[in-house]
Length: 554
Ligand code: BGC
Ligand code: MG
Image (cartoon, rainbow, N blue to C red; front, top):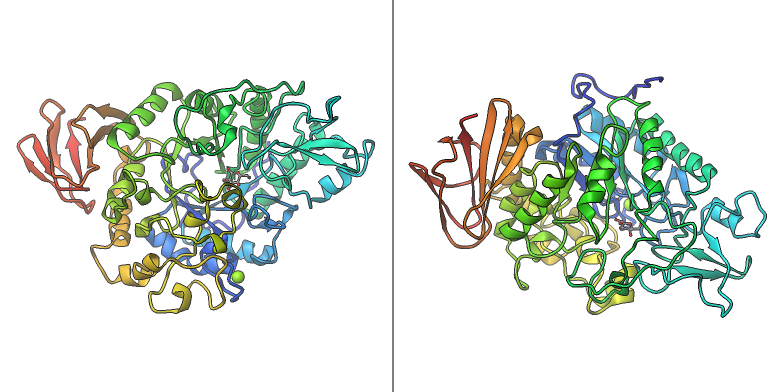
């Protein structure tokens, strides 16, 4: 095996460490909405580069940049038309190389989104594949004849609405698309396709990226026999399937999470292992047995490093919900590793999901501390460090095709994708001198970075304080986790690594809470994390939306 080192890593800042990703704080950037450097209303790579010191100061260990490869932008970059180039809207390949170099110099690793389950219909591979049934790429996508009555071959549904089969008049066949009809699904049963997407990964690894966030990592394979999925009654709303979406009415046994997927992940891992200190976090969206899938996909050392869980991306973030989901995953995961997020570019921002319709900006700091204290690697989404709530986007301003399709009961993903607010008094919050692709939310402007910088009690300062403090506690980064049964609305667990053992308690309510920790081995209250609590013997009192951290007898 040849170990190629990324030449542009600054060894003084980034120490060699194959395990750096365990417990690393990953800051997710949606490039369209971070900072626009050229006034076209769309964020870009040079914009991100400008803000790397801000991200490093926050205390992130890595960034994950949502797609910036060449794309017609039907799904805003999740529809790639060239795996080996940057879309001109975001800059150039040289801009990206500069970003990587500067990130490394700031001590930040760089993960990029690798979207290989499907391409854009504008990708050269698909343009060739759709020409006829005999061209060299004829089998690179999933093509199927109509049934005798003209209907698609089976009942599979697209996440974004309707059948996942689209008719094509050149081949007189249907092709499969799990998302938009302009996102045809690559046929992973074809070895040449596997080789082609592995080459796409190599291209970016050679440039020096530290790894990938793998889009829809359980969607790569489909059932070769094209069997129809069984039906299911959706009991509860989940991220991939709001009640308004019939996708949730099927058990997706045949169109995703197929057994062949694991062997492909092993091939991808072998490529990763040719490059030092790289990692992969795979997005695993599944309604059935997601924890078992996460365990299977991250078991041993030849599959994914980490699996990104949807558990905390939907629903109310009550203590009971978090305890149930995380402890269940912990009980299943064995030697695997999870990645936790409460917000991202696909879901309603977490502070707007607390209880029936109310938003609690003051809850944002404690929620950030929860996600950064769980066993697993936390992903923070841009704006989460500022306590941003979901933006209100009017129907006329909607950009997300998913939102437009399912309006008005499901509003889509624009509300979490509006631009960052940097300067409270600058036009468009300092995001752009042009007209932003989505409006900057007025409430975000009022809480822009410039405002929070000047307020030591702001969400931003609290996030910095907490993440810096966390770095001093190896237990919070890589330690084991055990949940405590405390009164409702109080989440508690211990994290232990060797001598370092920390008990964490979080008050996820707007009432003061008193908790007895008798018998837990608590020795003293820890300080420096920025939260407020009182300790009287073994009894601690937590004001509303506060947290406590205590040293344990190891
Ligand atoms: C991404 C979405 C995207 C979809 C299709 C995902 O899960 O996070 O933003 O629309 O994959 O690529
Ligand atoms: Mg721009």
